[in-house]
Length: 212
Image (cartoon, rainbow, N blue to C red; front, side, top):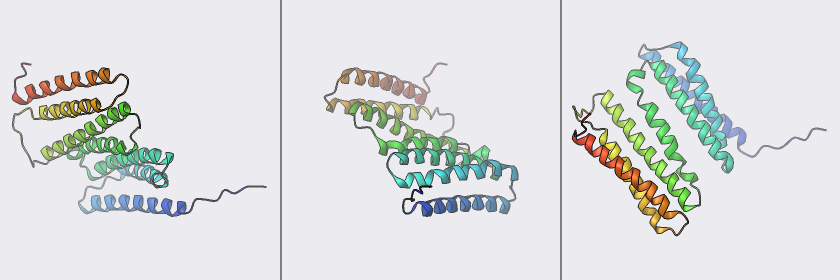
């Protein structure tokens, strides 16, 4: 006798919806590539699997609970693979490679909703998520530079992002002072040291004072 486990209501609908979105994305990229005469058929071997991987993560994400985080990771990996396939299909990897910085950074930043309960672990996770947002901003800057929208000249502009990273770590170290937890002073010291050094190095790079 075989026992059939009933599906949770909406499971089939979520799978069909996720697969439909994946199919539409593949069709949109393919049609766009053909319309601008940049169709590279072999890129489909990257594009289609990426769309299917992302579609697999969708139903897990909407179910919530412990599976939601796994679904989120699968969807992010699939989206990244799909993006690589789309850039290859369109022949735009030379200009679009900053997306490979933006999307993983946004994926890490998006995990903030699953923050741990312990203040120390939460501060560490918040720091990583905020640094990831800075990484996404760095990717946007690279994208604008590649497209010619902005031009910093000979300035070592990336020193500003080092300063931003230092400020993020510093603020999260200061936030820890509100909590009465073991090893609080050690954690604050470990955060403040790299934060100050990174900020000062970024300032030197931005001002062009680095001697090497």
